[in-house]
Image 1 (spheres, rainbow, N blue to C red):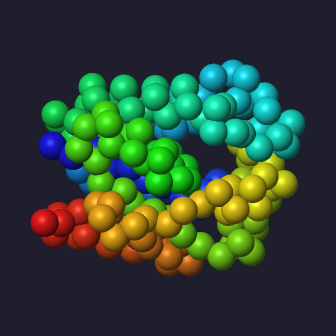
Image 2: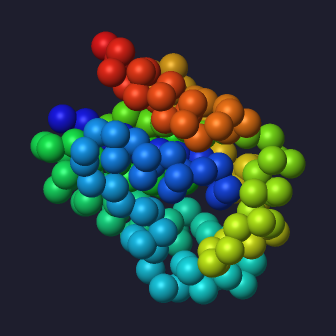
Length: 164
């Protein structure tokens, strides 16, 4: 089976869409933020962007989780900003990426209005600078987050079920 990785920068709706997809598929969902070492959370809370070195143990943990769940299928969120990060996740098992993409203004507005999250709006530009869109040889689809979450879920599931 395949693990769906819901990817995108902060504020793109990964948790909302990912949990809804997992519910529709009747499978488990894992939130990427729970895989971060405490030091990463502290850096981001302080407005300090993570480095590739900071992200390495986090990505390895998510890849391990994928390896434990790919036989039954699952859904996990991860910013998965760079191709090499997605390569690490692919090392865990068969994955399919759902890239939630949107304008900077929409992302910033979402980040400003959400509560209970450690990621400050000040880090959005660093994430957007690091973001490498899915390449043609990477399994997945990119969807525009200006659409309602229910539409994103339906489109994602259709694309997932129609994959080669």
